[in-house]
Length: 480
Image 1: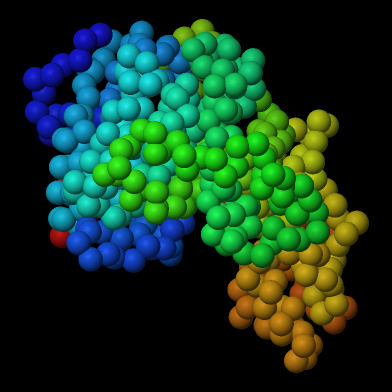
Image 2 (image 1 turned 90 degrees about the horizontal axis):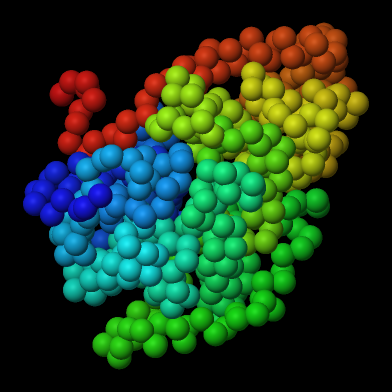
């Protein structure tokens, strides 16, 4: 379908912002860059995204597509070439003007830019890079930018985008080659993983040049827990082929007037990806194994999960009346945190024999109920690694327990003040040899108690219908 060029800027914004709402990879910035004289904006590590829609979408970034025109025919995508929909595109100048004007009015704090594939990956990536370079140089925008790299684009354009953006994403979308062949015939694992490796190596190169570890720094020290997915293997990045060479790429494409961009870090907030949940038949175990492999092989900052929202009628897809698996998405996010911060492995949480989570329980409780032989755990003597695996205990409260034990014995009142969620934890712990209540350590009994505690939250997650991206200008029924 031809692009409609006579649309107004506001009409383009409405179309291209709505088309971007299914990409969920909007999170806190991960960079800490102060304001700079002569430049507009800054980025704070404490989190650029202050507000989220009911469906988890962030609303403090201008999240748009460069264009919704696409030559690909991915069956799950609203913008696929076979769909009869209005097509349009921003010019680089229009995108920059929108970003700056919205920023000046305090509507946004940064830009999230993705795109359909117009003509081919190279042309699309060139247009995105042109817009970002214009924003950084001519408009002197110093705020946060997250850009979606286009698989199949040349390495030099991927590198160029990385110097201009704070975070880069390359969406895997589907966890297996079979699913990709079935639903996204124009894509392949090789075209996605190649630029992902390029970004990984370039980030590592810059970290080494700054005297840091090639591996990304995590927000806690839990990656060094014994058995953590980050503790065993991945110091190989510093010796990977191509590390240390990537800065040369920008010199060949930008010209001397833009060599100052080399002083910028490359994708300082790291790299992320996204997988669609529910469009295909993969189990939670398969998704979690893929997630763990991506963290280990590509040092990703985050793996995002997006519950499939039926948009297109196709025999290869769930029917249009299928509800998005929002509760399943929520459980996978909880499991992702267990991988990154709690020292769990995918094979511990699930297995071929038990390939899916019990959606009525959070994954940590689900794991604990299948390993009741390890409980109850004595709070006053257990090591940090064991305390961290107690349902209702997080990294901060576990650290507080270890610190407080140096000064005396801990009881249940102390645990509550430390932030432990006792409505979950009390089934699995003792203080000075005594449980909080006299209860049987039986799987069926504890399962009934925990599911009743979480019933209301689970019901609300499963039945929410908020798939609309929040508007910059709509009050959504909120009265002044």
